[in-house]
Length: 187
Image 1 (spheres, one colour):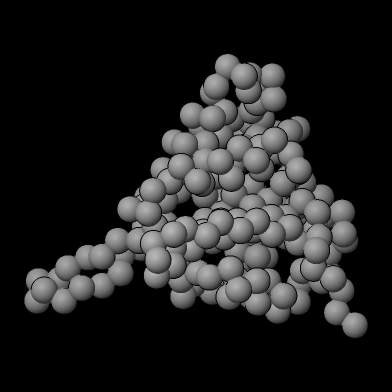
Image 2: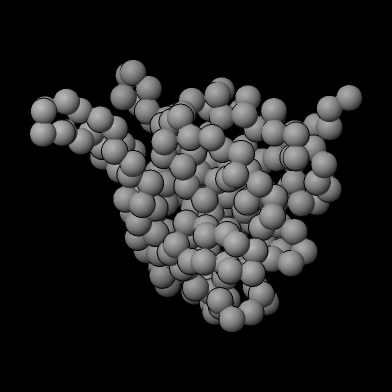
């Protein structure tokens, strides 16, 4: 597993639960869940960038830029974070990162973005979806039922990761890492 994946996992463990979900209050005092995906992504950007800038990491991250919410017009995609050499070329496409904090969000589009990001045109070396507020069992079932994962070559599967963060009833946070290469072809 590449160092950037390990550092990304470390960055996610530094994010406090206050960035996992937020409750809003309406004028009539009723409450609702607010979408905090951008808040989580911004905190992740900050934590990951802090790790990238450590002197011990200078050689690994040399000439790489961490971009936040950047548009990839050529493929109609807008990943939450991208670690790459430049927006102007595709020389060193290190990592494509998507974040989902809504526990009810349909992950189909995000799964397809992961597949697209590892295709020849963008050719990201690593593609990661960070799923927050959903149990790993539920996320894993969604992964297993996403038919498009079964049709991509194993080499590309090995570059797709899911990081799952879930705070249970006991307030403990479960962290799970899943690599799509362990998804076997359906018989």
